Length: 361
Image: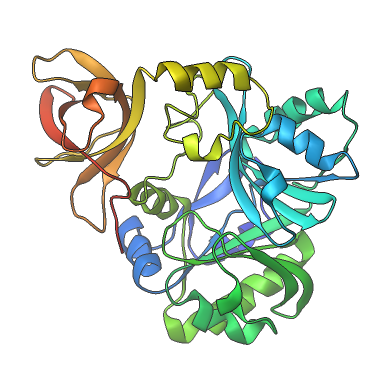
C-alpha cells in the first residue's frame, strides 16, 4: 500500500485507515454522520491525494484530448475546468475525469486513483499517432478538497485572490497558505461548495496545517472517504466502478450532457447511433418508501417480482434520514414517480424513482 504525504498526520488525528485504490486512506475520523453534517453545514477538509494527474501539453494537446474525451475541450478558456469521460471502444466508459486548461496548449487531466495506470495506457495508445507531450504527475502531487458553505469566508485569509470570484468549475493559479503557484479550483464532489487545492507533495503538510488553523473558528474538521461517498450520493454524482464502468454508456448513465457530437471522439459513431435509437436502460435515483438501506448489486424488481435492474450505489442519507440509491432500470421504469422495489436480503422494499439531486441544500 502507498501512503499519501499526510498519512502520518491522519494517524495522529485518530483516523481509521483502510486500503483504497492502492493507498492507505482515511475512511473516517469521528464518524460518517458527524463528518457528513460538518461539510453540509460548515466546513471540512479531505485528503484526496490518491487521485491521478496527467499533464498534456504541446501543439497537439487539444487534438489528443478531443479524441479521447467525450466533452468538447475546445470550449475551455484558460482558467476553466470541465467534467468529461473517456469512452471506450465497446460502448462503455474507461473513466470519468476533470480537464483543466492551464495554458493555451497545456491541460491537466485529473482521473480516478484506481484507474491511473489503465487511463495512462488508454490515452497513450491514441497519442502514438498524435504526438502530444504527456507527463504523469500523480506520484508528485497532492490534492486537498476544502468543502462546505463556509469555505470562501474561512479560507480567504490564506490567499491574495478573491475566492468569491472563482466561479464553479473555474480555477486560479495563485498563492495559498504561504505557497506560490497552487491551483485553487472551485470544484468538488460534495455539492456543498468549496475548493480543491493542487500542490506538490512537499507543500501539502504546510497547506493542511494552515487550512485547519484558518478554519478553526468556522468549525472545520478533517473528513474521511466514507462521508465523501454519502455526500456525493446525495447529489447523484456517479462513482466510477459503481455507477459507471467499462460496460455502461455515458448516455445510459445520464451523462449525455458531457457527450458532444459536434466533434469526433472514440466510439462516437456507436454512441450517436445509441442516442438516435434510444437507450434500453437508464441510471435513476430512487428513495425507499419504507425503512431499509439499499446496497450495491441489490436487485431492482417490479410489482410482480421480475428483475428490472440493479442497484449501483446506496446508503442511508444522513441529510434526508431515509434510504437512497442509484441504479440502472429498464427505460419504462425510469420516469420520476415510477414505483420500483428493492430486494434487500429476503425482503422486497418499495421505492420511488426521483429526480436528482436527492439533496437540494
